[in-house]
Amino acid sequence: MEEFKFDFEHLKVYQKVLKFIDKVFEIIKDLPKEYRYSIGSNLLRAALSVSNNIAEGNDKVSQKEKLRYFRISSDSARECVSVFIVLNRQSLLADEIFWKLKSNVREITSMLRGFSG
Image 1 (cartoon, rainbow, N blue to C red):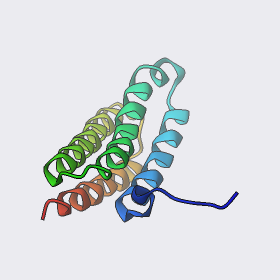
Image 2: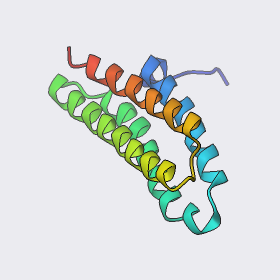
Image 3: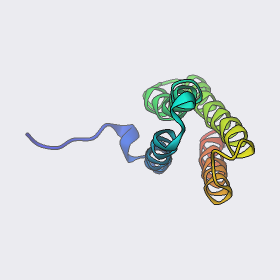
């Protein structure tokens, strides 16, 4: 079967989000078991919401509707930062990883904001 890609798969922001989600999975795997299903599940849902809203929104014909999905995606990315802050404060996420992920989210949200301009 010939390989094909959906339009959203070609977006640089989508590719960056997939790498971000890979890192989120690593964090969740390293969480103590008592937090993996509560905080870990919340973090994973938020991270997946970033990519899912890009995928869904990119197919919208109306620019206004497309931007709404990209804003939701950005909001979900910011939700991830809130979880990272809590994990870092509880010494469950190393400073180096925390700052790297926070920087990743800043890049992602900036790229998403760029779609409105």
